[in-house]
Length: 338
Picture: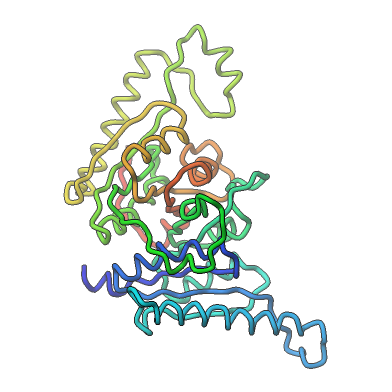
């Protein structure tokens, strides 16, 4: 356990904005707690090799120099802070050149041996399945690492910029790590990083599954027509009771196989809209983190993938850990099949 904590590496992408800086308090909290290492990454436009003969490259060169100075100043503030300064070998700046910011972040995180990526994001509507900022969308699309996303309003309810936000202390981790599942092996890939985080933070784990509500047979035709895009099925009352029983057994069996009793594990079944129920449960339990699997490409029929995960982040008031389905290829983990 001690060796694992000492080896934990966190990467925080920064772009010079106040919004991006708001990911640092939680990153610093985890770095200090785990005695880990923090990489501050800035991606800038590439400079062509023949830049000496191309005046159009002056701006990218200056931008890279400015980025290096920006990160060095933050590192200096963190290592020379009056309270809880980081050791010199605990934090380092890194500026890389790339035309694709999101993919560069994902690639560099892998090269640096990163365990977690932490970044803020802004919610915005659009055709993208993940209702996130474009850079965040690219990161979760290309990485096989768990990404801890934060909404900037978590640390700035007033919306006022604070250039020293990264020196402020993050709230204590006290609530459980809630893992949202939908009964599929795909969603279970979120268990490995969730258990890892819970163990290192010494927090309980709670498995949550949400199933659609029962709709009386005589109301199904008109109701289903109005809600066909939500993926609900035609259900008879006795079938619904059976589904609830199966869903509860699924959670209990999974908790047993994953030895969740060691982390004071609990299970919960809720009936209703997935997004609303996950947010309500997380708020009720004062969750420290909500962990979900996501898929950045299609497959809208999977209730816990893609859109649901991003809506929970956009509407919730807690950090959301998203795990790309590609994560299962990088780290094999035991899952339950029914």
